[in-house]
Amino acid sequence: MEQNEEAWELWSEVKTQWRSSGFSILGLNYPSLYLEASRLQIPLTPRMMRKIKALEAACLRASHTKPEDPDDPDHPQRGQEPGEMD
Image (cartoon, rainbow, N blue to C red):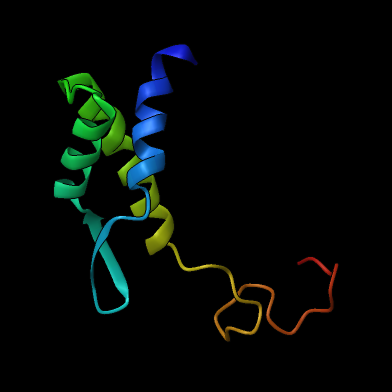
């Protein structure tokens, strides 16, 4: 979508700039966002910030979701043959 091109361009530059603690990401490094927005001459309007924060939230949800591990003893299909269903 054309109205999201600048948000995607900015996101492409900052999507690796995260604040972290231990083995978890906490959120986007906003000083990097401000620097890149200035460099790219992309105004950080309230609408732009909502778009960036939506992308940030999606990444945080994905990073905090435990992938399904069939070897996990609590996995619902533990002990079943591949392709076998309950």
